Length: 348
Image (cartoon, rainbow, N blue to C red):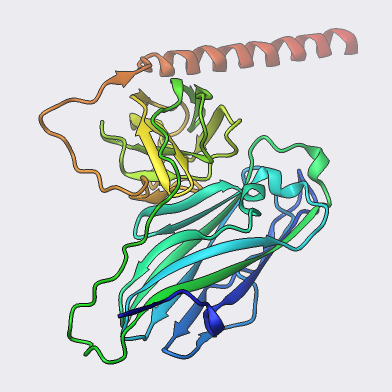
């Protein structure tokens, strides 16, 4: 069996353009395109020349996702890699944009966009012969971004490339030994410290202390069970981020959260679990919070552990939420009455 590592015409680029025009009050105008790439023994074709992302008027916490489908019609197995190339000489927007690539619930990469302009290949896993793979790409604009990013644009290309086993004489029904996709990124052996949760109006704000060590992203997982493993979001912000607000939560559900660091394709250990119940309204049909995806926890599959109860840290008693709601309402009414009496006094 001969291993081919040349890319030849199996390289193709995607132009992703993100334009930032108005920070606070603009309505996002976007034109996303899910793209399909079909590859045979001699060539790869792209379903469209449109960009994967073309965003305008994005704002802090804005998140957009699109999918690329890779179809491998070859009779051999392939490993898929990607690398990014920045098309702008001056670019400060990429420092507050995070990009993640997720396939089969595995986070193959997540991190600040500027860190990806390293001219290095990053793995997206393997694709078996005569099969397909979907990679979901998510771009997120940091919740903490300020006005200095108004009217700033960003343009970059993604180059995919295959490394495949090339054995034309081997029948397709014969098992082909091939190299498994390797993750060469060092695995963090630490997790964020002092992880805590604060109950807000139909939202929860999570806080933590940045750990010491090399990593490219945080992943927050949460759910309505003590394993906190229903949804995950690897687009939390840069390694300097120490706070994140999860919106769109119902006030009648206790939620469980945990956090981990990751370095490229290598996730670290999770923190302890924290639990909190939001204040506010009971939502009949709460939606999945922006940026979170079902089962995206890293590169491992978690199974409920019935023999051990996870530790619950920073649990908050919210039984008196209704009491404080009545107090705030009473204060509001008293203030209205005072304003009315003052008005009557000055008029008459």
